Structure formats: structure tokens, C-alpha cells
Image 1 (cartoon, helix red, strand yellow):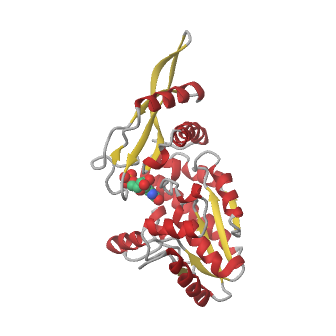
Image 2: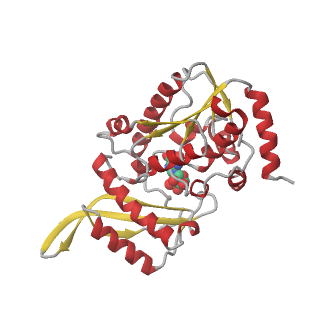
Image 3: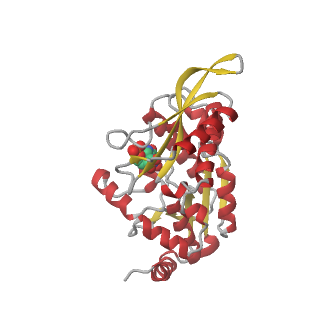
Length: 317
Ligand code: XMP
């Protein structure tokens, strides 16, 4: 029988054997997989694990600071890198979803590579690849790295001639969570909804600007906070808000407004491959909608996405 304790003991021993005194670099995303991979390797080699957490300016409100804090609490040797402007610059003028993904992937690799070159004599690249990722990448494009599939770039760049270590490669998501729990990782990280690598960029339809990111962060924050407050957060697989390029007429006092429409999306799912829209309570939706329109400047209409996957996807881009 598989137990997380046995897995941890065996994996830590293997990692110590494999890595010896070598230095390892790992990109943290704030998600479950990279966090659990980091804690496992940290148990094995301590400070020789160098974690990099990039602020791409496309994360949820306050997420970079909060997650960085949790990582430091966990004892990880982690460097937070503010690369917001690089990402915004690369995204300027781009509206096509795939082009946005490419630009984000490219900048991420640039930033990550620059940072990893600062670690003298680093030998390994660690990744939080899990079993379903392995299967997915084998069927589509040969076994390769999570950085690739998550950021949709054409594979690891040649100049990163690092050996790859992937301690979660045999695990399913629920097993990763059990291992994370046994490693005493914060529930706030373990229970987190999936969040796409390109972040809010693919929830802002059309061109991404810092101003739009700011509006969407506020909207998303109200939605997600209320879900947590009303104990709905753990009931759904994933939730978030979308900033549409539409403007609609509204009234505010005696004034006519002409402002943005935002959409809320919440889905139930087992694995993200198929999904159904969550039947969130009407009262909850009413409260969230009021709060968004009252508090977020630039938004005067909220709609709820009632499409299932397929034929719709979870994200709008
Ligand atoms: P879709 O929109 O295809 O999303 O139904 C399924 C799951 O994948 C996530 N997603 C992404 N994750 N990079 C990622 O790391 C991406 O480009 C990307 N696109 C979608 C999405 O959030 C959902 O969990």
C-alpha cells in the first residue's frame, strides 16, 4: 500500500543519493505541484535548492507577496523576482491568445535563465511534473518539461544545459496533495484552485495593459474572497473572472455610464478535461455582483458564464 510517509522517506533518500552536494534550481509558481516538489527536495538537500518565484504581473491581487511569504515560512531558499514590466512590455500590442502565451513563455524563460545563471555551478533543474503531465507530453510531443507545457514554448532552451529532476513524476494530483499535507505545507497552497501559467493575461480578452490587470485583480479578489467567506471555494474546481472588451451602458446616480462588462466563471471538474458550470447560489452571485459594481471603478455590468466544457473551455482564451 502506498503511503505518503513511505513515499517521502524513499524519495528523500533517492534525491540525496542522486543530487549529492549539487546545486538545484526550481521555478515556483505558487501552485501545488511546484511547492510540493520544492519541499521534498528541500528535505533532501536544504539550502542547495535555489527556488525562483517570478512575478509576471499577471498573478492574482497580493498573491506574489503572500505566496513568497508562505515559502519563506516553509524554510525554502527562495528568491522573488519582480519582472512585471518585462512581461507588460512583451504583451503590449498583442491581442491573439496564442501570441500572448508565446510572449509570456519567452519572457519567463529569459527571466528564469538570467536568474539561474546567477547561481554559481548549478547542475540540476527541478520540476513539479506529475504523472498526468508525463502522459500528456508523451502523447503529444515526447517526454519533456513542465516549463514547456505550462508556458507553451518550444521546449527548454539549449543554453540551459541542466539535468532534470522530477520527484513527483509517478504521482497523481491527490497523492501530491497527501504528500504536501504530510510535509506540512500550508493549506492555502495545497487547496489552491488551478491557475494557468499565463495568468490573468488569458482572462483579459484582447490587449493586456497594467490598467486592465488592475481592474481584473480587484474583480477577481472580490469574487474569490466571497467564495472563501461563504465556504464555496472548496466546492468548485476553479473560479475566476474575465475582463471582456465590451462596454455597456449603465446608470450611476443621474449619470449615464459606459463601462466594462466582466464575466464570472466557476466550474466543477475532476481533471479539467471536462467541466460543468457551478450552480452557485443566486444570493451569492447577487452580493458579488453588487460589490464588484459598487467598488470597482470601470465596471458597470457583471455576467455569469453558464457554459460547460465541452464545447466551451474553462478559460475564455
Ligand atoms: P481550458 O481553458 O483548456 O483549461 O478548458 C483547462 C485547464 O488548463 C488551464 N490552462 C492553462 N494552464 N497554461 C497553463 O498552465 C495555459 O496556457 C493554460 N490554458 C488553460 C486552465 O486554467 C484550466 O485549469
